[in-house]
Each structure stands twice: as C-alpha cells, then as structure tokens.
Length: 112
Image (tube, rainbow, N blue to C red):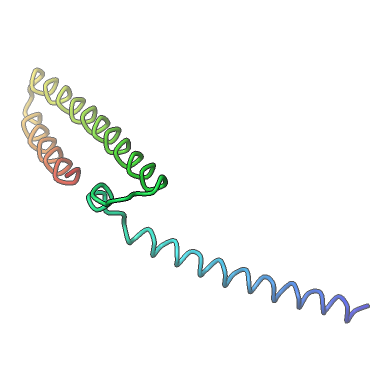
C-alpha cells in the first residue's frame, strides 16, 4: 500500500513539474508576443486583411479615441485647477502653476 502511495505522489510530482514547465514557457511566449507590439500603420495599410485583423484594427482605433477623450478630460481638469490657483494667488501658487504646466507638457509628450 505504501509503494502505491509513493508511486502516486511521484506521478503527481512529475505532472506538477510538467505543468510548471508548460506555464513557464507559456509566460515567456506571452511576454514575447506582448513585446512585439502590433503596428497600427502596417495593419491599416495591409492589403487583404482578415476579419480578425479588421476587428483588431477597429478596437485599436476605438481605444485611441477613448484614451484621447480621457487625456482631454485630465488636461481640462488640470487647467481648471490652475485657474483656481491663479484666482487665489498666494506666494506658493506661482510655483505650483509652473510644476503643473511642466507635468502637462510631460503628459503631452508621452501621449504622442
């Protein structure tokens, strides 16, 4: 009975090791695929796109539109905050305005 249990444990150990190896390879593949990136320009100019490629391109465009709207909302909220600081001037508000403007410029560079 003990040898049966040992054999079962050994088989389970081998299966677990196989699963860990498979999972490790899968994670590496997923990382490699994610780091390849999908070139939107290439896909939009590609002749004879498949249905899947068309759906991916549509989703990419929709995501860019949503991101653009979100970025505009963030910038407009920052602008309102700056105007509030400017209206209620104190000695530190000028420095805050400069810092916020620099942050906006950095965000705009990242967005592009």
